[in-house]
Amino acid sequence: MTQRPTTAERLDLAPHPEGGWFRRTWTSPLLVETPNGQRPAATCIHYLLLPSEKSEWHVVTSDELWLWHGPGRLELSLGGDGAEPGEATIVVLGPDEAAQMLVPAGVWQAARPLDADEVLVSCFVSPGFDFADWRLAASPTL
Image 1 (cartoon, rainbow, N blue to C red):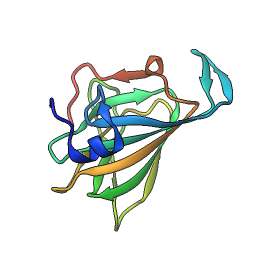
Image 2: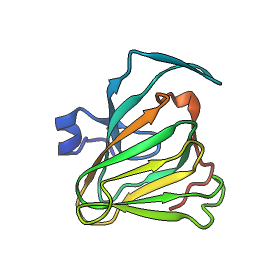
Image 3: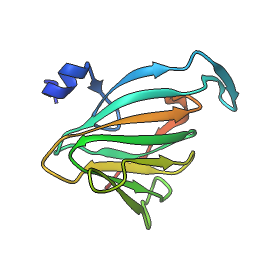
Image 4: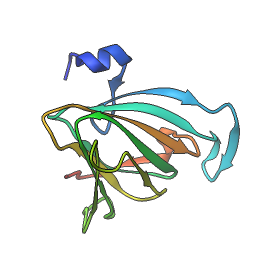
């Protein structure tokens, strides 16, 4: 997509490699040691998916807390090994469902909107997110 959607413009979001739109909104000034070197203690992003978009299967080496803002519902799939989603656990974030979901470190995940509305979430990652600690599945499917 070459043109940013209205919400991405308003929130100054950029394209994310796994799909959708994002911008880091906070980085902890406290540094912690991880197996991959120093990282902020935590980071947070806004993450937007349009109805036609999805977050491809990926894994992060830190815990990731998804916080739903709406307006649409979000299907968050958890599990698999990156090559095959396997028997994914499905969690729905939305107005009549969960408002947040923790994805433990090392768990494969993917997401997609369930409605005709865009979905805005915040993702809080601890220890803080670094692309060196993130992997996208080779053959992503959702």
